[in-house]
Image 1 (cartoon, rainbow, N blue to C red):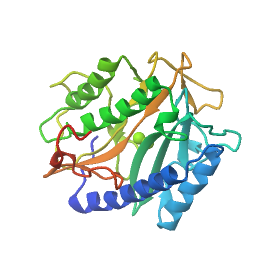
Image 2 (cartoon, protein in one colour):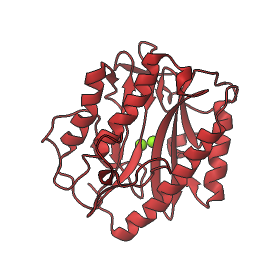
Image 3 (cartoon, rainbow, N blue to C red):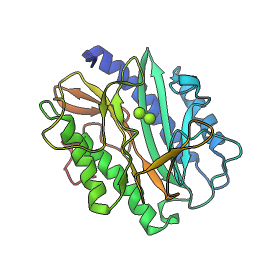
Amino acid sequence: MIIKKTRDEIDRMARAGAVVARAHEALIEALRPGMTTLDLDRIAEQVIRREGAVPSFKGYRGFPATLCTSKNHEIVHGIPSAEVVLDEGDVVSIDCGAIVEGFHGDSATTLVVGGIEAADPAVQRLVRETRNALWRGIEQVQAGHRLGDVGSAIEAVAIEHGFGVVREYVGHGIGRALHEDPSVPNYGRAGKGLKLTKGWVIAIEPMFNLGTEQTRTLDDAWTVVTADGQVSAHWEHTIALTPDGPWVLTARSDEPARPLEVTATAW
Ligand code: MG
Ligand code: MG
């Protein structure tokens, strides 16, 4: 069942989204070679608690941390650890959620340690184009459009660049629960699927791999990795469909919260 949100609820979700954005901004600012993924987790939890919010993931189905931190060939759900050191050129996807006034915000970003130029050109392209695909999907969040429009816009970017599109893990509705209906796949056929209507709030989260789309899960029962060991990237935002079009509730200060007001080529 899809739970539509009222304007007041979307305003509350925007406050949750803003906390998540602040956490990502702090992590981007702090990231240095030699840090561990546990260092990142502590920074994020501090920001979230300081804002009077609660981490969404900690305790979710037993997950032990504030962030999911997934390095290089890890796709999603990596567990922050003092043992996982981030060296120059490593790719780390950071997924963060926070609860404010009972509502969740959820957003992921993929960073290269030492700056994007520290990665191989192919990896740079993967990171940039996965982000681009997220925004191509966000542009489709309009009343009367269908979930297949979102998925096909995202998938088209992967096809253009020959990336594997992860299929087992997809976007989702979000609200009082971290994961609500509907599922929001990163693939699909334009014009097919459920029709988007005002009041929907969804998390769109493309995961693209340099190689195969196939995944496997490590023995910790959380960390999902690429089956061929090649690098993966993951970007995510929480988006409300308002009467004025999509509102990116987790937009950072360097991103447009109202993407249809910027030119389509901005991303
Ligand atoms: Mg997430
Ligand atoms: Mg999510």
